[in-house]
Length: 594
Ligand code: MSP
Image (tube, rainbow, N blue to C red):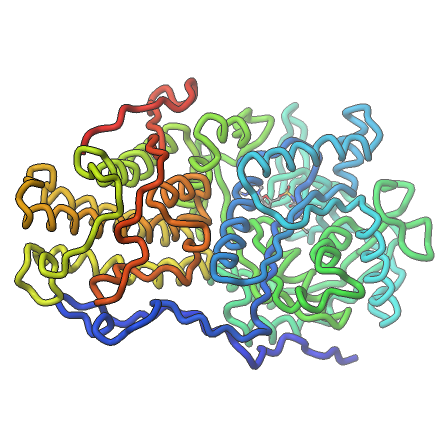
């Protein structure tokens, strides 16, 4: 049997690169010759759609920090693409079927749907509290999803890819996963009883033997290998790509895709066989298609689908899902962005260890932007990260309150900026060739800020958000150094030459802040909005296309020059007390005069 490969690259690619030519001091060629915005916006019409998903979350328990992390990463990519002018769809939601949920509902003494509705609302509440700007929230108990799953099943069935068989082997209800003997080990439970566990997740496994439907996964082994080899960017970062390749070189047995209804009632019945329930992972994965409009209207979105997932669910997304899609004759996801996990005290979060971090509580303690910034700045996709409240407070104080907030505060303080405007840039004070008051480090600073959008873009594209934030943070430090070096508060506004230089320093600093505020919108939307509003930057001036830094230095007009600052002069981000961070709410700090 042959299956068509449907992951050929598209002919028309987006051209949306920031120019990355050198910005050399003191006379950068780029600035000499360019006469329009620094961003090229020639997008191919076809490529303006973008579709990003989070995993759908199990509703057996309340949301924890790891769940928020998956959602914040996807939200960041969605917001970034919107800034670039893409038509972006962003799906999240809840995974409500399966044995694990059935058992959790039983334990709570509730009927499954009422139970699921309650926990699903908690996820929704968390997401709205943290500004997760999804465009669709899917629940697998919805009718539209049931229709999509039934259709998808029928397509696989009609192609002869599902057959009636029997499965005998290990099953982990916590992971809703079938395991090979080599993936199982011995352990003791809390009462000291010997049990079998999944070596990967540590969750208990049970032996099961039942009649059910099998999917011909083995038939797809070589196509999956071809796909991964032909698309080195399909699974990112690289180490996860390699992990999938390794699995594919091992045995790939057929996969059980249903459970006996007598064991699992809480799920979608197999079409045409009421004695069997569809395997929860097949059910859940189809959510991505449901949101795209499957089975009738999914084309626009489906060929640009990207999934953000945690490393624990890689096998389901990079092996089972592509195999199902190949079987159904559908394109494969463009990219699977994988992230690592948050640990607490070096250990996996778990109820029994009592180390589960409640993301809602933390977002109230540190603000939504604070948690978003911390997770994205500190979280590294390649490796696990350990969470402590102290780290959050220290990072936010250093980078958002002191460095960014302090810079804004200095440049907008009435003592230094009495007219409360975006002041004029004086080309004689800061000439493209040496001769004014600028020094070598100042030219380096301009160079770094000029290049920053391209650097950030590169890292946002590969979901290395922490690298983008590292770069922004380094530039904020450079701008603070620039102001500190020239101590404008020591100059005399009554002297006209001094005045022009003070205004030039402030103009440049505000231009830097405008770039930082624009680039940070996907990360800290509320703080960026506050910052840009204070600078007087209008909503239509906040897109990626508006990232033209320091137009006046290039001999062009600057639309902001002379404009009144926004009236909200409040603290950009309030400092937190590091040692008591877990006890207190953000504290307002006094503004300094410079
Ligand atoms: N329901 C499945 C996904 C189905 S998608 C078709 C599932 N749900 S989950 O609630 O267990 O996990 C959802 C996401 O949270 C996954 O991306 C998972 O990796 C992530 N996290 C769970 N614990 C985590 C940490 N401790 N740290 C970071 N993310 C982690 O799997």
